[in-house]
Length: 262
Image 1: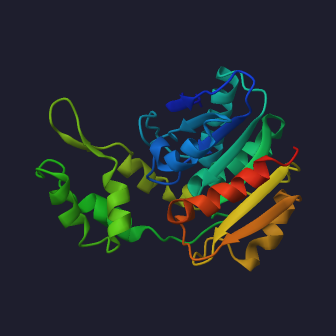
Image 2 (image 1 turned 180 degrees about the vertical axis):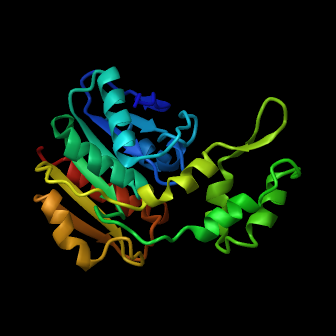
């Protein structure tokens, strides 16, 4: 199938500076990791991408992690990047892992935030129900949308995260920037992990939120199977959104990892 040309934001500090690619999670966009971008953009050329079916990247007939990884690789080629550090959160972490496994020669450092190379159980039904409950043709404001969404999505922070992708087009019609129906249809692939014999031997860090169950001790063998040199770090007092909950701690451990020789 044809490879999607991803939308991206480039913050370039110097021609000879090292590169850092940031990949957001499910229902997110390039701006989700803006705090990380701001921290590193004075020393790194930072590329923040919109995954397929997210942000301003094209919508597809079916979201697949392999396809998304290949689209990131295509962008790396287009930007003439020889090697880059890659950081991904949640679904973005899965895409980053697959990129490192499929195209390890272009990845200098792999940093995975709160996700593992395993298949997960369905855990987004409330979000799906909340998104589908918003009557886009009837609402007048984001507040109207949140009121409907709140009947299904109880966490205010999750609602605010999702509402960042609600916008009005040039005709004043309300729309989601992400492909709601497509992502729901592709969800079984999104939570899956296709097994492979490939490995990535470069500098690798998995960062876990102490209150999150996305990475558990039971996944250790799977992580080291694919990433034999992987290190792990737990940020205390954080959940799945660890980079937003404790940005200083998150950025500090990422910086220490990026300073290690590839």
